[in-house]
Length: 189
Image 1 (cartoon, rainbow, N blue to C red):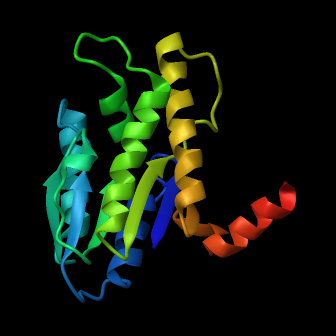
Image 2: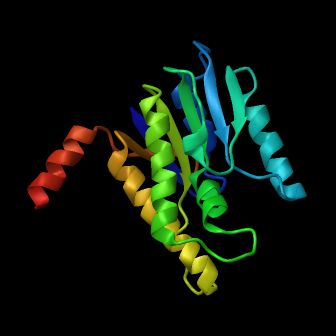
């Protein structure tokens, strides 16, 4: 099962995703937390430390993987929390020389990694940011990133069995079951 959790910055989506995966704070196993945020600045370090505190005592083992999700070897049938698609897309999209990789290739690379993770577990929770709800007028490079994350998020929503948006700490169910969504798509054709 894939559960996609989206929301704005500071919406509470991370805490919701952790609690959903672990059964509302009931430690019933070992969980894999795949961290994609690179610790570049003091601000990102503080955010990473905050997320470590949130996960404390919940049974998570953290794996840092900034690119190439497909290379990860995950033990079968452990709950996986992948955080955050927005960082992963940025890491895959931007080359070291500052130029951009192809948007469609980036999307496919991210999705291939997600599919591989999904095949190794029965519970994959993916956290992503809602980046297209604000105003336009960004640089061309930023607009390309927003376009790419939008494409990835749409594809993930299609793959997901459950889609939840967290707004001000309140989870809003967008979709509960894949079968219902497939029926909806079929009826729209």
